[in-house]
Image (cartoon, rainbow, N blue to C red; front, side, top):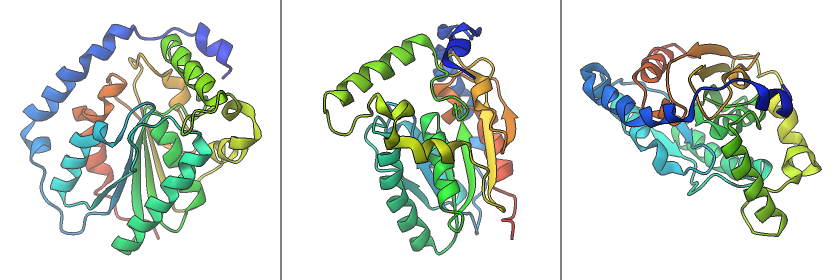
Length: 248
C-alpha cells in the first residue's frame, strides 16, 4: 500500500474520534468488564503506547489488567516519538527485565505505533514473548494515516533532522537507521508466537487496511482510533485471548 494510494483512499471522518468518552463510559458501565474476575495464574503483560502518547495513555487498560491478576510493566515512554530502531532497543531492555522478574514469557500489547514496536519485539525475542496484540497498528504501511497526522509526523521528522534528540528523522522512513526495523515489521512471526491485530473500519486516524497483518489473526471492532484502549469490544477480545493456554 503506497502513501499515494493511502491518501486517495476513503477514510472515516475525523469527528468520529470524539467517541472516546462514550467508549470509556461504555466500558465503565459494563459490570463484568469493570470488575473482572481475578485470575490466579494470569500472564505478565508489557504495554507500549502510541505515537505522541506516553504510558499514561494506557492507564485504564493497565488498571483493568491488574484487576485480572496480571503483572503489568510499562514502556517507560513519556512520549513515543523517537526513531523506531532506538525505541525498540530501549523497549527490549524493559521487556527482558519484565520477563526475568516474572520468570515466564510476556504478552506485549501496543496501541497504534506501539503495536508496530511490539511486533518487532516479538520477532526479535521469541523466547520471552508469548503473544503480541496490535491495537489499530499500521504495520503494513506506517504512513497510512490521516493527512493531519502525516503532517505532524513530517514536522517531527524535520525536528529530528535538525538534531533534536529523542525524535525520529526523515531517514527513518527508508534510510539505514531503521532498515532492520522495517524488515522485522513485515517478517513472519516465530513459531509459537500468537499475534492479534485489532482494527476498526471507522478508525479516522489509521487506514484500517494497513492494520491487517498477514501473519496475525484479525479482530474487527467499531471503535475510534484513540478509543481502542478503552473500548468494551477490545476488552472482550482481550479477555478471551488471555484465557487461552500458552502454546508449547
